[in-house]
Length: 62
Image: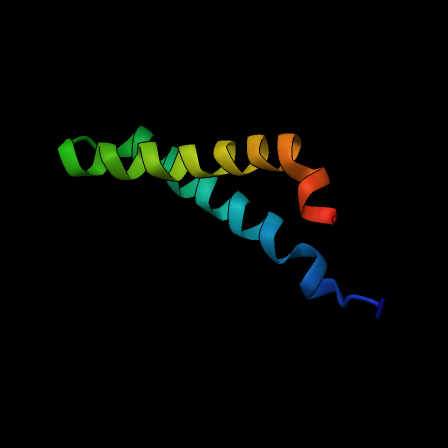
């Protein structure tokens, strides 16, 4: 297995962190129907990814 670069290692944690920050900022600063859906989605995606990786990491590795 070839060695991974720093970008390959940290790209998804950075993406999930930025998505979480966007969701929190939108939730705290803005109000409205569509904006609430954006914040729910932005905060929900990292949670879904974490739950998926926790329960299905053995399936992904094999």
